[in-house]
Structures are given as C-alpha cells and as structure tokens.
Length: 76
Ligand SMILES: [Zn+2]
Image (cartoon, rainbow, N blue to C red; front, side):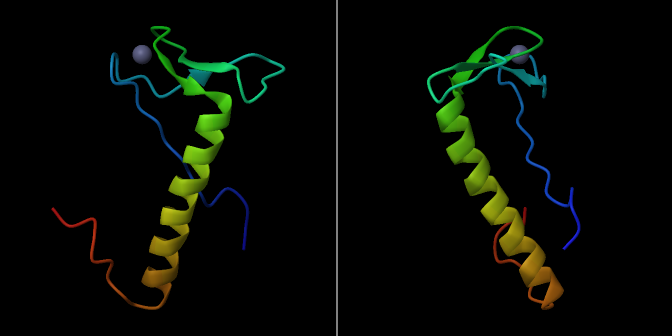
C-alpha cells in the first residue's frame, strides 16, 4: 500500500477553512484551531481520535470498492 492514499479533511463550520493549527509541541490537551478564523475545534487528543475514525471509514470504502461492493452509505 502506497503512502498518502488517505486524506482526512476537516472543514471549519465558521468560515469553511480546512487548515488547522495547534501548538508546535502539541499534547493531547492542546487546542486545535482553524488557521483562518481561530475557531476552536477540539483538543489535539480528540482530533487524533476523530482522524482514526475517518481513516477507518476511508479504508472501509477503499476495501469495498476493491471488492466491487458498493457502499450502502454515501448515497444521496
Ligand atoms: Zn474558520
């Protein structure tokens, strides 16, 4: 499996920005903010947990598409 296959995207509810920022030496308690407007999302620890969830969903989607199974979700 090659690198950079998974993309986890966040979008700011306030301004639609997708760039997040946190402390350089972030701990699980550090606040993660929107780089554009400074809106506070969550803590770094929460973001890590959320990223794992999103990555798992993405892996599930890739696996199902590799097997030719259409995901039951994601339809509009
Ligand atoms: Zn923002």
